[in-house]
Every structure is written in C-alpha cells, then in structure tokens.
Length: 82
Image 1: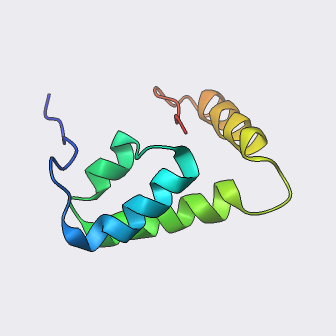
Image 2: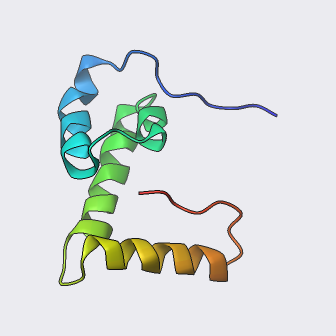
Image 3: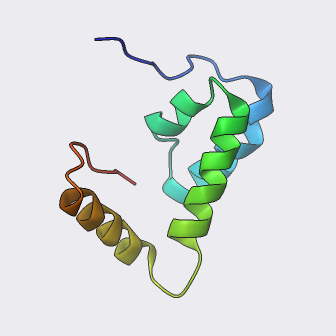
C-alpha cells in the first residue's frame, strides 16, 4: 500500500504555520507534516482545525472527545489524535 510520508525538511514557506501548530499542541503532528507537501493544503486544514477545535465556548478536551465520538459513530477506521 502506498503511503505519503511527512516532509523530511519542511519548506520555509510553512515555518510560521508549523510554529502556530507547535504552540497549540506542543509538537507538530505527522498529519500536518504530511500536509506540508502542499503548503496551501496545510494552511487550509490548520485554519479549519483552529476554527472547529480551538474557538468557541467548549474546552479543547471537549471538542477532541466530540471528534472521536463522531469518528466512531460514523465508522471511521482511524480516530483523530490531537
């Protein structure tokens, strides 16, 4: 099976986005490192995660639990790990 691997040395164009992600999670998850193959995709998905998971009145832990519950109920094989 083919696999897309994280970018071994990310381009300079994603440095600011990686800094934001690391500030939020304490590290840059492989998912975002893989998105770095196409910087517009990285930025779009990071903006989506910020909007869905980090804004609003729920805690980050609550939104993570909701995302995992949704993944289980929709039959997703892999759960999001934030």
